[in-house]
Length: 311
Image (cartoon, rainbow, N blue to C red; front, side):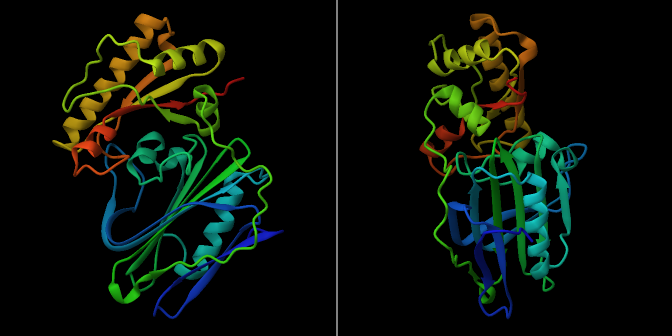
């Protein structure tokens, strides 16, 4: 377990006959909490390999939590192993666990559910993941841990597939030590370096379209200025779509959108091609519901992910 001053987080299932407590550093702060009485959640059962991703889509009550641990000396691995061992006391050993590249790297990160930044941050080269299943087979938990700068990020998702075992995840806390807590980040360069990724949110794509008009988008100007000021940095542009159409078609479309942005940066802002990669993940990482036009508009976007050190 994680030693020293701690924050005790009580996790349990109603009528399940057992409960456990997770111990985190005292200054761990709950920054996101989402509970759904009935939802679908895709449980990873193995790594992404050769374009295949073994998933079990479970239907039931879903509880999602994210904690940030500012100014921590613990590595992402230390945080992960401490929490994995504690969760194993309740669920048993994980049925699947992995580290960044072993998981499938970029493809895995953007295929699993991750609470949106700035609450959760995942360093593509330094994250850990585990899937747990209860002995009765009706409850699952997934744990993802990463670190950005001196801040640790912990995401825990629990799924109960039976109404008899409804989730109850109360939180008992000591007053957290807020020293070093994150302040809101508004500057483009600061946001990119602090969070590791940000949305180029002034770009607009119509449904099914992969072209940009000739507008001088502020986000591209900001990104070009950031790259000029940080000559060792490199980025990946990640295209996203709404959920209209097949996954294969949307992955192709999202990559074409990312490449359109990449080409604009090269042609109009003289950014070196070697410093910008372009990838597409289709509709696998939505920011909003795809059941409304407003939600679909939000989901059609390109994000920029920082992939190389600044120094």
